[in-house]
Amino acid sequence: MPSSGSDGGGLKIVEAKTIKKTDNSTSTVIDPDGPAITCDTSAVTTTDDITYSSPTTHGKKTDLKLDIQIPKSSGKKPLVVYLTGGEWVLAERTGNLDQRTYIADQGYAVASVQYRTTASGATYKDALADVKSAIRYLRANADTYGIDTDHVYVWGQSAGGYLAAMTGVTNGDKAYDVGDHLDQSSKVQGVVDEFGPANLSEIASDYDQVAKDSNYAAGNSAAQWVYGPGTTKSIKTYTSQVAAADPATRISSSTPPFLLLHGSADPLVSPSQTLNLFTALKDKGVDAKRVVLTGAGHGDLSIPTNSGASPSTSSGAEASSDGAAKPWSTKKTMGYITNFLAGHTG
Image (cartoon, rainbow, N blue to C red; front, top):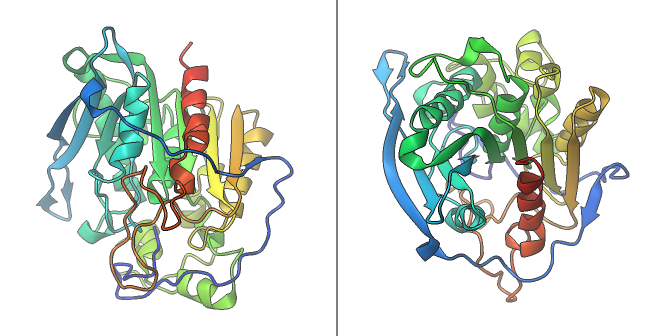
């Protein structure tokens, strides 16, 4: 997702200085305080660098990888497919290890998946096909990894949250099932969307004009995500292409339950993005819950702002400079995710 660094299109996307207050009356609002999560890495078996698909983009083949953590306890495990953020340009599957391990400690197989980005000339359609390929691969190899194929969930943050939402709302849409293991289903039974964008034409709607101008600049990474490499278009206009990339337009009777989470002080994705998607889900009768973290920003960012570096998230459970747990890595915050997963595995 956007950061204060380069967006891959030679343009800068800046953080908002002011954020309009969102009406959270339909959401659960929490203070993300309390102790940080702790992880027991000895309780899981990790297998890294698994090639799950080798798609071709503009004539170039890419070997896409995933890492999977399997609890050592007996029995088949529900699967959680994790999708990292990366401003549409990066998809570092190795990030956010502590949060992933924490979920695995609760009894879930957790697969962190690499997907194609604008850096390779891909669009959201390619990345969405990659996520579905990973799900089919894991179902096809369920016996190898001890996976319960009836309970598969997708969890993403930022750009990964967007892809998680798109994966859920396209349940059963065969247009994105391409590649291997087409005899397997890519459907998911639940979606966890942490601070993901949705309607890209409103991604900066809560922000000051400078941030809006940056986010809607023609040809930036968000525009490439929709229109493809070399575009001179902007996502500011809600064209048919931008609408097609909006998960709210894809909601159907096949859409699974959603948990959406957002920080009230997020300077990179307007908090109203998850609110509007949540409202659309509820209006269509989908089981959905939205949680707002008071004062929290865009994940537990571990780089200084305006550094020009690529964005990354912390490993999850480290403390802030004053010794407090980071808001997205507290047991309270992560408890909403584990409770959601547990509530939909019965």
